[in-house]
Length: 128
Image (cartoon, rainbow, N blue to C red; front, top):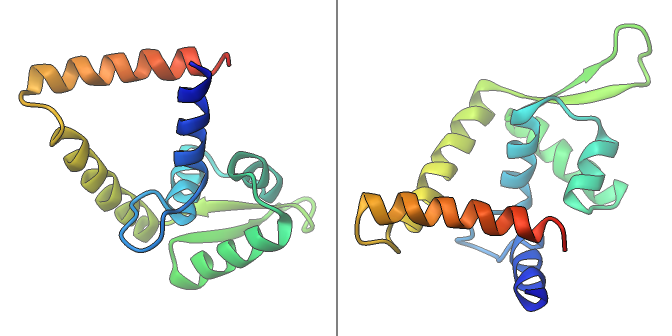
């Protein structure tokens, strides 16, 4: 179990170069799509230092997939929000990941059972 946990953390913590679906950009879009995030939240969830996160987010803002929103009461407080363009990019990437994942299974039933088992494994791994 410990080896499996190490392997999954390793697989999820790094972008694997060109052709990888799960890049830091994809992870950031996914996190921000769930709810707007402060830079500190993103740093913790992505295990990134502030300077690297700033580079990533500045690029994503320039690409129009997220926007930086300042708090109306305290202009020093910011959060990142996903844009429609970002949602579309995330949707396309998610579809590609799901297509690859479905390719491992021989039927829809097997795919559904696989997802259930995978979710159960992730729940178990969250305690390790």
